[in-house]
Length: 294
Image (cartoon, rainbow, N blue to C red; front, top):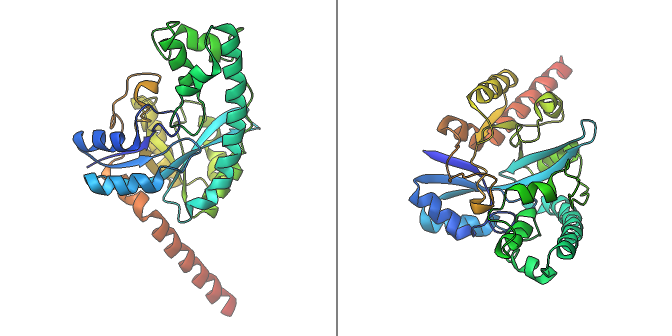
């Protein structure tokens, strides 16, 4: 059975709504998905309710933004199956506020360079909890300045190496803080797409912080990378997940739902992970108590 555990909707930087995403999954023969919008939990409950209607199992999830200050790299951590997702609202809100500030600055810069209004740009973010680069590009595309979201104009405006970029700094929490927040909410912390931000050298450090797993199957990972990550996860006894990172037309390349998925064996391990962890903790406590009694 196919399980796509990395999907985005209009609530963040995806182009399709929750119900549309679930219908696509059902018609594609995908019976399990996780809605993992960026720093946004708003679709969790609704997704599960709609999922039941269409016979699609929707796993509670969110993709949290973080920053490795030592390595100077962005890091995304996927949270799954949190017992108390409301405990993640605080970290989500802080990032959302920071992203709103950055989005507003970028929007004003674009409106000063092109003959479009801020309202025109904001209308393209309708339904989202924030203003993302894709929304700005969609506005410029509708205004006739480009024929694609990700093209020369995108890189001129949003590539750090571009002399004409309009990027505004966004403050993210540390990786350790995000992992601790996920565990505090009773969730499972999985490193998202290590290829995207070149997080390979830091994975072991994140494991020491409590990372539970790695997203092994992702459109950015080639066969060699999948093998390398699989070997590492087996060695460290980490969970392995997979997902398409579906964004609809807002993705940086054509990706259909289920392009990358989580094998059934790994899905079963994810679903039983917390119970197994609790059993191991209880066993360790009993062994410690017996040693104390001797």
